[in-house]
Amino acid sequence: MLNKVIPDPSSSQCTTLAVEWMRNCADHHNCAATSSLNLRSSTRFLYLDPNNEDVALVKFLPHQAPREWVALSYRWGTDQAVMLTHSNLAELQEGIQVHDLDHTIQDAIFIVRALGLEYLWVDALCVLQDGSREDWLAQSSKMREVYEKSTVTLVAVDSPSVRHGFLEPRDQQYVPLKWSLESSLDELDASGSLDAYLSEAWDPVRDRLRGPWAERGWTFQEGLLPNRLLYYSATQMLWKCCAETRYERGLKVSPMDEIADDFADEGGRNFWGFDLFTKVKLMPRYVQTLAQDTRGEKHRLWYELVEEYSGRCLGNFSDRSIAISGLAAKYQDFLGTDRYLAGLWKDDIIRGLLWHVVDAKVFDEPNRDGGVDRVWQCPSWSWLGMAAGRTVRNDHAAYMDCRLIARVRDIQIVYEKPSHSFGNVRQAVLSLQGPTLLFNRLYTAGWRSWTSLSAFERHVSHLIEDEHGERAASFAGEGRFAAVLMLQHFPSVDHRLDVLVLEAANGAGAAVPQFRRLGVVRLCYFDEKLKASPGLLTRYRTVQDSLPYRLGLHPGFRRMKITQAKAVFNELSNQRWPDQTLLVT
Image (cartoon, rainbow, N blue to C red; front, side, top):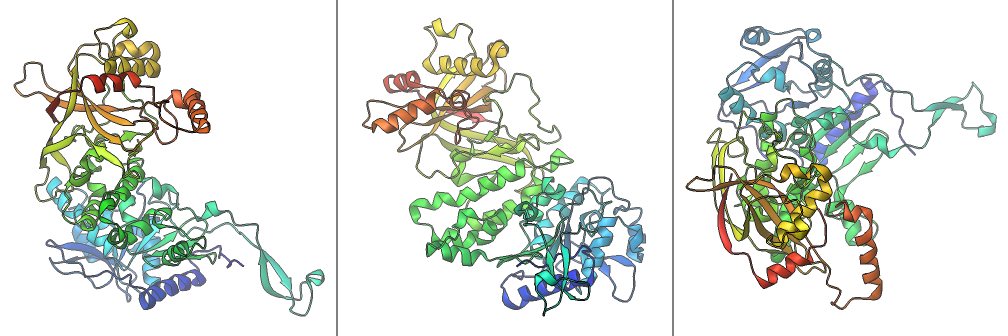
């Protein structure tokens, strides 16, 4: 039996339900922030005076903050009617009428008052929008604590911009049935009392929080850092905290109960079956359960976070690192002594370097921009340099049985703000050592008959020809390229081996050559001399001959082109590539 979803989300029934959810969490769950806001610089909040309809901007000195506050997560969508600037700072401190603010902000103020709280944090009104770059970096570095330690964070899921509210009337989802307790359903008449409502089967899609809010890069960490969130979607309200998720329609989900059911083999879910919010909250406990030889799995969640975040949009690409910096800092707390390196982690750097862009070619055509904002220098080896909206994936995330071949000897990073090691990078150089092949061009026309080419060079030419057809000739220019053996799945029936391909980034006369990342080539072949069942061999040949396999679209391999590379493996077994150290920028 479902609960009735009230068409008006601003009704007393809805606000009462939201208050009940919040009080229930405060009374029965351990979801409150562990400590109060304790920042080294001042922080602004909107003060909602219960005795005055106006709101005013107030400033708390360093190491001070209100005891409770609400943070707002929403999609800007367009310039706001009122934003904090030096010119209106004094006016906002004096007070402003609520109706002068954008609709989303008005709705947020209404809900905060209904929850019985007095302070609201909104980025556009609490952070100077015309300040210096240094001031903006200082303010943005606070966002982790502002959201993480909020009493609750409001989320406007389906509002396309700040000018649209999130308390809009919802479609009628129920048909009232009028009947008396004494009568049967065959005796319905207008004199009975209203006791029940008829609804079509609830579509689970309505429970998904995939509105415009979920497309914005900044909202990603805003939806994962808080311990309590109150969502307003076009179909219902939703409460999410560390202990449970409650839907206005009546459904309740408790992750710990489901994990217990999984252990008892009663249809529950294991850790990796939950949504990102739940996994982020349970991660500290999960890491403690890992055996020593599976500690590498603690990086797996980070690769999932990167995949979701990278596909989101950003108004300013230079925000790419900053908009996930709070989440990166929190993840470092999980990992302990590990070091964050421009989107990757030092203790898992070899796997981390093998990211790829979903549905992209192994090698993009020459002279492309690559989506890197020239305002800041992102290293080529980091996924942060890819254009926002291009989903980045790491196919090794869930694989622990990998034999690392290459190693990183040293990493030097200069940050835009030295004290903010989770922010933008000014310069970065990675010293990579491993078996390396140096060659002069990516593509050689007539590669099939060139006996002077290595097996790997012929393999790459074949790959480019398959991907680009007649345009393969654009890759024929001479240059300096390097292929580094990175890791191999072990044990593996197809000898799967990943190779990082690099291109020289400075001139041929440079005293110290430097390279930039081009892409990852995955080599594999199946040795039919190995003992295997006839059924397995038949299945493998069927997959191998399929069009998705030949195009590199086979599930699990994705962008990394899969072609038979037995010749390369034979060559490597007869003449190993020499071990070299390269500088990668």
